[in-house]
Amino acid sequence: MAASALISIKTNDDKIEIVNQLLLPHITEYVEIDIIQDAHDAIKTMKIRGAPAIASLASLTFAQYLSRALRQEPLPDYFSSGGALKAHVQPLLDYLYTARPTAVNLGNATHRLTKKLDDAIAANEDARTIAQSLIEEGKLIAGEDVGRNKAMAKWGGDWLVSRVQPSTGKTLNVLTVCNTGSLATSGYGTALGLITYLHEVGQLDKAYFTQTAPYHQGSRLTALELKTLQIPSVMICDTMVGSLFQHHNIHAVAVGADRIAKNGDTANKIGTYNAAVLAARHKIPFIVVAPISTVDLNIDSGDQIPIEHRPPLEACLVRGAIYPQPSEGKVEQAQVMLTPFGLDGIYNPSFDVTPAELITAIVTEKGVAVKKDGENFFDLTPIV
Image (cartoon, rainbow, N blue to C red):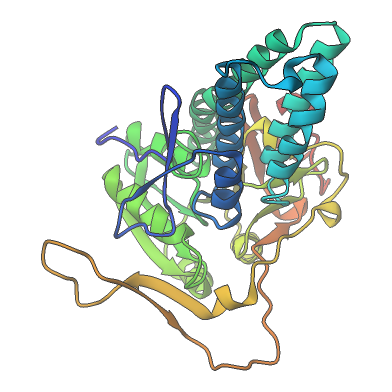
């Protein structure tokens, strides 16, 4: 890589810090996560975002909580038995899960920790041993992310190169939606990881990314990440995707996912469905890049994916640095309202669902899935 990637979560012994993504790209401020409630607030208010990143933060914070508890003298009463430990910590896991309902990674992380807890109780392990195994599992959940991101980026990147078969290097132009880089994961990224991989192997010409809406941080974070990595890039408004496809040679659209149903229907940041419809019209491959933990085989289709709606006021506000750009020194920021007061209603979903029929390929760390000829759904069995 030409430069060091940004870091969403920093850990040092017992200390956890996250970069406050609400202030990026103009101000880089790390916020300490000291208690379970801090993690819940950071996830819910979107100080941290990206399905893999929020799962990592929840797992690390839970591990931090238990590590501190084990150092207390005397030990808290809930270490008297495995059952007492479960009665105390299960509500904490359930509470963390409520922070973001659409992103399945968070639920998978909390369910994985619950299963670890239940299996240890069934094996008659003592509460101390159970707590230590939960700490290790929490750290493992966060630590797995970078390696699998690099694996899926290579799978997807190589698949695209094989499909396009460019005759020269620095040829491919790829559009992405929202942020799926190191700020949305524990490192490297999913869809943005694919773009980074193409850049590293000398196949990328430009990365295009959409400004989904004034209040969503995704495009601004993507701009910051691509600039940091020194990857040539172009930002466009989401209403201009059709024009881009008409007048520029775009070889693929690569997006992340917050939840993928059994049939391949995919929930992702609002605006993804728009891009998929336009990509299909222009016969541009549409690639979903996400870890196995994002695939939810318990739901048959996207109709069953819960869609989070953000507070209506968020759709009316924009936050940023005051223009013209200040000279070196303190950056002054402001938040302003773009709409009239007293509107009759505001429709403000955070996500939309792209049907499997509009998706060309789904990539996980285990490989690439494509639909069989004539079918509008995926068999995800080989890649989960």
